Length: 534
Image (cartoon, rainbow, N blue to C red; front, side, top):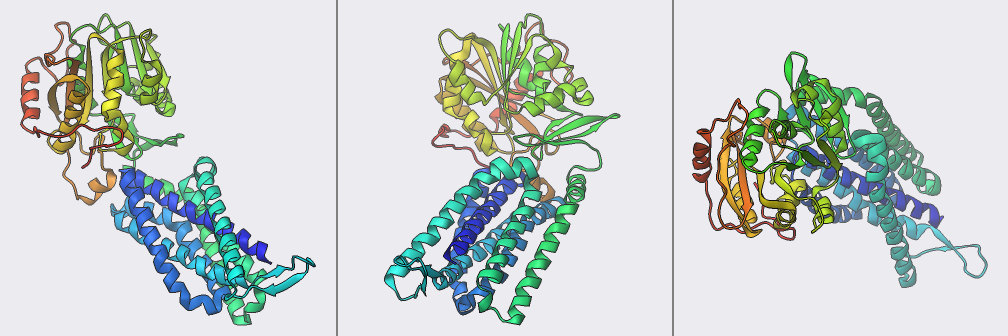
């Protein structure tokens, strides 16, 4: 009877890790800053597991019924955690404290499993090594049995955690998604705990406790099943609460959630993982300020890092003499949507249908490492069209090492322009980017552009905007850089096209506006020591 116990330990460990990873993944999407969210979830959960172990002492005398009820409660809380977290974010605008509460509750319940399972597994009779027949149950006071029990228990627990950790990204997320994946995991958790108690330890249960375990777990399974049936309707309602009624496209690529609102009579807005990346009404302010100052000079070969929406490419293609544009984008789903969606394709001027444009689906850092070399193509202009550096997944593309790789593909007299986040709202992040570029051997010219739409490419996440805990950035900060010690000249090319938001006389004021926020003495950001924060 020892093996059924170990099998349930394996399943429960796998489910527990799935709950943990689910909270980290969803919190990173809803709140942003995945490092912070992972640290909060893991630290609170480990602390709570210690509390759970202490609280479980009172249940050891009734380990079977205690474990059966505990697994039902854990299945309910863990299985519905993603739904409740998303609902709080969508309708209440805040999910940080809900995240902490779920981490605490799930951690306490997981921590209580261990002493209860120890009690159950010690009661499971071993088979005699000499006869192969069932022997006496292990006695808690027997040192040899205690050591074997601990070894068996933790072996099953660690292997189960491995399976759960691998199943989450490779099976549950791609096949079921975050919400349904958590619900299914909860159902598996409830069934495993109930079957173990009701079958292997049925003699430890009275008629009343058996009915209680059955009733609780059936109720939990009913809730989880109902939620699974309604999850699509819930997700659509929550999406409307977050994005409004104008949601036209909502897809989950392999990397992120992509939502397009508007179109038809209204300009489209593009959200990536909940952050407004393209505001169709005024995106031209951002893209004109990003691209056009860098196009003053040689521009035959242009590299765009990011820019899967095609809008930076649209601006580049307005210049005569541009022979090739290489767009390095991590998510092919964004490029495909920008190419095929009528509203987005119209907004980017069908840039991806231009024969001069080549799309490379790759991580920009790794792609530059592989392509940079003496025999490789050199670029006259490199445009870094990336989210704010405060967003954790983008941090390595704002590191000194990354700018060193860019320098290896820059042609003589080549220019690099970097979107570095809002200069007025997050000056420390902005000037850290400047310090990082200078540490990589560049001379820089800071400038900024006003007219930023609320929430445009916001770094911290939608929860900040919904709860009103942060002021909205009202500008974009940029850095124009060249190799060497002499800063580049900040002006438009003589043959620049007519722009809607930027005139030749605007750039000196844009530079002065950025300089007013200067913070000196900041250290550069590197891969091993990222410096960006809020």
